[in-house]
Length: 114
Length: 116
Image 1 (cartoon, rainbow over the protein chains, first blue to last red):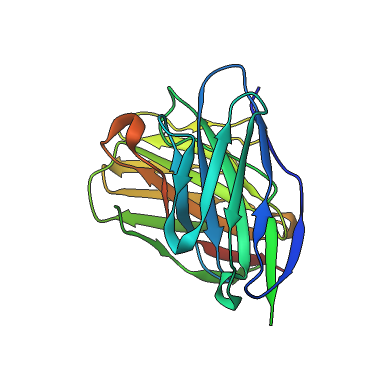
Image 2 (cartoon, rainbow over the protein chains, first blue to last red):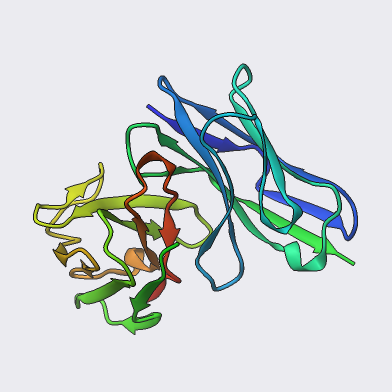
C-alpha cells in the first residue's frame, strides 16, 4: 500500500530565511509526486509535480523539489520565504496507472514570521 | 487547467439531516473525485465518480452514507446523509482532465460543513 509521510507538522521560519518541508513516501510501484498548497479558507493549488525526467522540479512562487528515488523522498524547498507563503502544504503521490487518485500526507503548516 | 465550482461553500446543518454538495466543472472531464478534510487533518479520498457507472468507494466509506451522482462529464453531487457532528469537515471535489498521465488533479474551493 502507498503511504506518504510529512515529517514536520509545523515549521516556523523567519521571513527571507530558507525552508525545507520534508516528504517521504512508500510504494511498491512507480509513482508521480505532487506538492499542493492550501491558503486559509481556500482550496488546494498545485505548486509543482514530478512525473519523470529531471529529478529537480521547479514550481510556482519560487518553490522547487527534488525527487530522490533511493531515499523515496520529495522534499520541498524555497531559498527565501515571504510572509505570503504562510499556508498548509501537502505532499501527495499517485500511482502511475491511476489518474487523479491521490494519497496525501498529513500536511505541514508553514508559518513565516517577520 | 480546469475551473471547479462547488456549492454551497459552507453550511451549518442539524444532525440527522442530509446535505447535497454540487461540483460543476468548466470542461468535460473523465474522472471526478470527492475528498474529505476533517478539522486539522489531511485529505482522504471518499470515492471516484465516473460518468455512466457507479462510484467507487474507498475503504471506510459507503454508498448509503455518501451517495454520489455523476449525470454527465461536467457535473457531480455528493450527499452526506444522516449527518452527525463527526461529519463536520471540508468536502472537496477534484478532477483530472483528458491529458492522461500528465494530467494533474485540480480542486474546488471546498464545502465547509458544520453539523450541530
